[in-house]
Amino acid sequence: MQEPVLVRCATVEHDGTESLRLSVERDRLTIITPTVYNRTLWTAEQARTLRDTLTRLLGQLPGGGGSR
Image 1 (cartoon, helix red, strand yellow):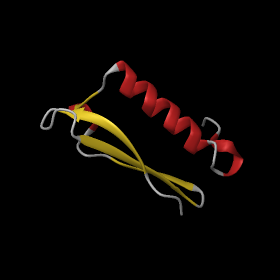
Image 2 (cartoon, rainbow, N blue to C red):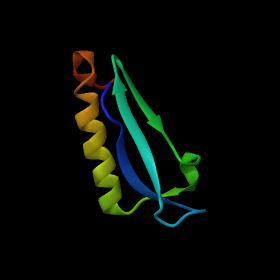
Image 3 (cartoon, rainbow, N blue to C red):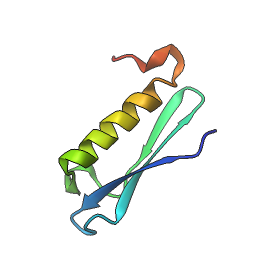
Image 4 (spheres, rainbow, N blue to C red):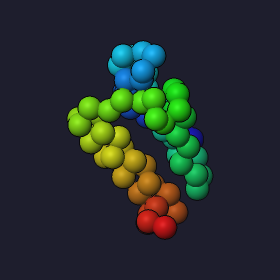
């Protein structure tokens, strides 16, 4: 298992002090969120970082993590 990747985000409760934890183990991508999705606030740069990180990690899954 690889080390989790942290992607910084702001939440309603904590302005910029939280992170999503993303990790790949065998054939599964796991995302641990600091709060429910609709209370997470994203700057454009944070959203790009999340997109790029998801793309990279999905590429590590069997079959390349193609869209479903």
